[in-house]
Amino acid sequence: MITISSPSFASTSGTLKAWRRDARAEWVLARRPVQVVLGYRGWVKAKARNQSTGTTPAGRFRLPYAFGNSPDPGAQLSYRHVDAGDWWPYEPRDAATYNVYQPHRAARTRWRADYAERLASYGGQYGYALVVGFNLPSGVHYSKQRRQWVARNQADTTRGGGIFLHVRGDGLTAGCVAMSRRNMRWVVRWVRPGAQPRLVMGPHAYIVTL
Image (cartoon, rainbow, N blue to C red; front, side, top):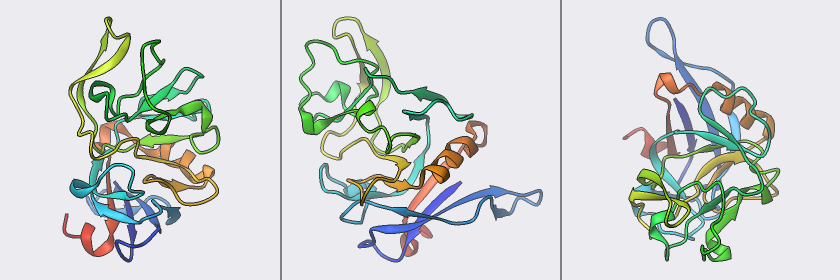
């Protein structure tokens, strides 16, 4: 389990801790605490988050897979090495592709610049990244007609997407959690899918109630 906590909902920085169960089934730290930065407007409860608000969703989440502009560091989760064609759209006008990793951009796609990220353009920040299971769709499959990956059960296009743990840039984030490259690389290598990894994050007083 990974926890990320801070003193209040207004916090824009916090502390990440990685936990494992020992032989007595008790939680013990797997690494010393790591300092992280958050969205520029702090936390908001995940169910109340709105797109483009600069807030980091607070709650419990899965960690389904990883990606990065750097080669696979030895991840145990599924890891995609980003190439020049990879995109992450969260375009409200296109609910089917909303919050769905795209290995290419189809010719007829009309994602607005502010609602899609060309992952290779964030070489440092997305050197290593873990996808946070916030507002992800399900039933994702390839559409031959659209030549894109689309979701059968679509995400909520009002809540935002593209929430990751990733490498820290120059300042705060637009909703992600960011840390040093060395620590992010360690996290990507450490998370094990067979252990049913979970991320719990938010103000301390809130996450202890989850």
